[in-house]
Every structure is written in structure tokens, then in C-alpha cells.
Length: 308
Image (cartoon, rainbow, N blue to C red; front, side, top):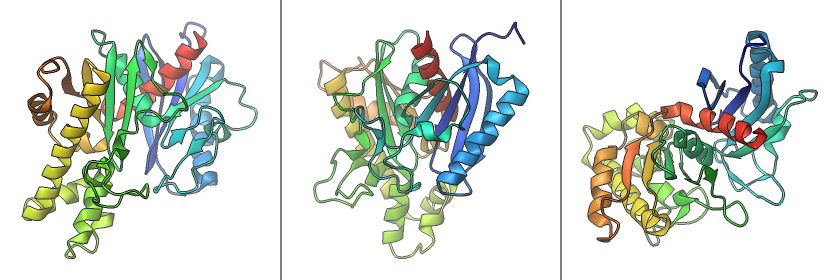
């Protein structure tokens, strides 16, 4: 395998699965797969990483893997390198360093960042004309990242770009973070499911998938209204972010966008209508090119750029 270019292994930890793949910035993703998280504890997550690394060793040889990147939910404190905050879908996944997922004896450099940061980084490699990109993931939560000059902006402590937890409705719906009125409580898939549960006629709403939400909304104007409100508030949050960050592009990705929860063109139009005159037409909203692969692409890009 001496003719193989340097490869990097990327992981993207989600609420219900771990996506992974290997490749490099020049060739892109050469392999991609997803594994469901069935055992929801640290041992179960470690087992997934162990199995993936074994597969990669058999397929391309670990000697061809020059580094490993990991995208993870949660905020990463720059000082400690540990995940901070609450991960409702993976409650054990806090106050830990993602490096503990790599089996002992795997002598490869490991780099990690928030999953939305890496989604944005991955997408930034596919939009060469744009150098300032805001990336938004719409899924079980709302994630966001900002890439400027090919680098992820993290702020002073690593807590930057938590757009899902800006207050959009004063004294509004409670969010999983413990605060009221957050964007995530209204615009995320899980937020809409919790609001559906509050209607009192959907006792199984928390167990719905995205298609269940969309199917039920076809016959329920209140649920349809929750989706419309989620989309509108997302557009307004993007307006605020645009005024502050002045990105060239806003990339919308994640399972919610892949599944058709919101319409990127409609959000772009709402954004343009809401922006001050000086900003109108300067920032555009686009669907993610890489879809649910963007986080893995960002993870391996992070590893490659740190080792280049």
C-alpha cells in the first residue's frame, strides 16, 4: 500500500450513531459508514471506536493512517480539553476528553472539536470561493460553527458559537440546557417533539422520528405551526449571527435538513427580508453539500491540517 497517499481517520459522534470514514483533503472521503449506538454508556462508545479501528486496519492498514479526528457533541473547554455541559442523549458523555475513546496502544495523534465546528470545517473545504462560513446543524439539537481563514473560531475559552442557546422567546419553552426560550427548544427536532408532547394528544411523540413529525403535521395545524415557528426563529437567529459575524455563506446541514424539516431557500428569503440594508444579498443560505458526511470530513480535515 506504499502508493496510498497519507490518510486520516475521522469520527462524528451523534445522538444515536457514530459516523466514520477515512480520506484526506485532496481526495476527500474515500470511505464512509455509520454505526448505531446501541449500548449508551462509555463502554459501548469505546467498543464502536475499537471495532472501527480494527476494520480500518484490515482495509487500508493503520500504518497508512497518519492521524485521527473526532467530532463530538458538547462544548470543549480549551483549558482542560474536556467536554463541558449536558448531553441529554448521551448523559455519560461529559467532563471527559474524547481521546479516551481511542484504544490503548494506538500510537496516532488525536485531535477533536465540537461536531458542529467540524461540520462547518468539512463544508468549508467544498466552497472554495468562500472564506467566512457559518455552519448550522439541525438535528436533535441546534449546533453551529464558524470558519474564517480556514480555521474554526472558538472564542477565548472554547465556548463560542452556541447559537442553539441564544434566547429567542422571553420566558419561553424550557430547553434541555435548563434555560427558557432557547432556539434549540423551538427549532431542533427534539424541541418540536417535546412541543408535540405538550399538546396532550401524542403520548408517543418523544419516540417519533423526523418522518413521524412531518406525517402528523400534515393533519395537525398546531404541529404544523410549531414547524413553521421553528423555521422562522431559525431564520431570525441567523439574521442576528449575520449582523455579528458577516459570513459569506451560511450552510445548513444535519438530519433535520436532510429529512426536509425546513426549506433552505425559504430561510434565505426570510433572512434577506430581515437583514439591515447594508447586509442584504451579502450572505447567502445554502444546503450542506456533504450532507451527513460533513462532520466526518471535518474531523479528518482537522487531523490533517494539524499535522501538515
